[in-house]
Image (cartoon, rainbow, N blue to C red; front, top):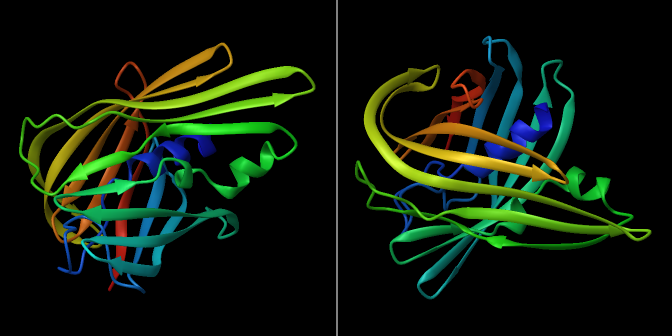
Length: 229
């Protein structure tokens, strides 16, 4: 369950800090930019830390692309898993490749299976405003082994800019947009729904994220605790 919520948290990381370069307000496009988030369970107990570092940036014409390295450390300081994903910025929006959001460890678990991955990229416009509805996104995995077929899917739906709010974290005080979404996870016959909220600050990125169960009870959260440009 913990890894599933972390994966959903990765899908919800729709914005990170920016250096004022090119077309992106909410994603870093400068190599070496590092962010650190602390994750908590529903009772506020620390579960670990997640760090993101921009390792490579490529500018081609009107499009800028960046690679983000991710590392998750558990509450004992041991690396639980690492991964990387890419995103690109063109015009007035940023797009994340759905397939690259999947952790290496997740793929390794199904390495003995025939696997087909498809989906819809996550999009985030620069011109956010309260009441705006955002496009849905999803990741679909179709797996087969010894004649047994297994499908897994995560859908991010009902995305909308809910409100503006000022919040404080160990990294500072930020004026944020609050983005609500519902994240539906389907694996074989099991289906779960995780509503969530993302606090997003211009020129900073994701400041805080919360995930709830269907009854609105807080299941997990994470907040920005360190930022280095």
